[in-house]
Image 1 (cartoon, helix red, strand yellow):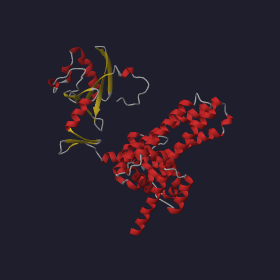
Image 2 (cartoon, rainbow, N blue to C red):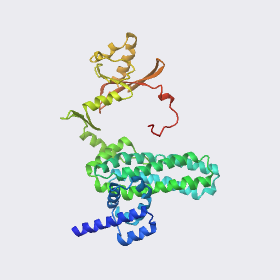
Image 3 (cartoon, rainbow, N blue to C red):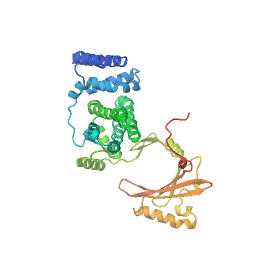
Image 4 (cartoon, helix red, strand yellow):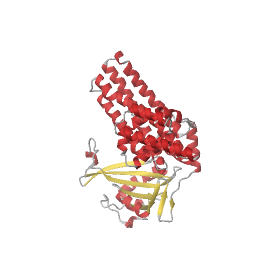
Length: 403
């Protein structure tokens, strides 16, 4: 047993050395030869562990990201043999793979168009390509589910590499896709294919390889059944693309929701445990007061229970309002409107109303939301008031940090 472990450690050290030398200029061909002669085969989990250890030892995630396509090529033959786990139709990995088949259909269609490009006028070809690229934009949802669900669970087991390296590659693909879609109308078709479309297809298909031969097998090794159940539940919130979610997934989620009722709890250390995280009371109070909106909550009996106390409140609120019926907080001419809003919420006819007014030269947006429990039962009404004067002036994008 110890001899087997030693051999495994030796293999990992050799692979680490090959990767480091690749980063210092070793050719891919030389790296492959050394890999075949000195290592032979390696599991996807070992590759993930090696890249994680390189990050731990100080190799920049950006540097690893720069070479991760080369790493994938290096391990290709070994990895294809190493991924052989069967997943149920409702398993998140199976669903990720089904989405990848949808992505591959789009990249195949793009490659087929390129191959037969002489059959079309430049305008026709561009129109067909653009249509497929717009459909490929759905890849963002696939990447988002991976980044927001798989990566956090891997991080719990000490694997930071995917979120540091693969997320960066995802964003590169997003940017390449956006640019390819924007440039198609203005660029010469020959230049466009070589500069924008072919590199995009290569990166998209390369990411499928990395997911299915490194990320997913590593996740299957590391995550336990409870982790996958949680990911399946959360996947419903994020959504799917290019697939119809299998019916047994709907049934499983329904059963899980019956069994697991996520109720908030007050913990012994003066914290509130919520389904999406824990907050101490002080954190909660100041968080609510920091929101760039004013909020007021009225319970199911029309009693004012709470308001936030931000430093720049739009409408004055005093503590004297707490415990008061909301109808008594409005002038007589407004009470009828208040009653109509509350009645429609209680009867389930509406979940939302909004109004906007000009106040002292500012545009104020006022929204009312019905607050409901997991069964749709009415718990109360939330009033949200926001000064949107400056928001309305925003144009274009702002991606750089002002310091």
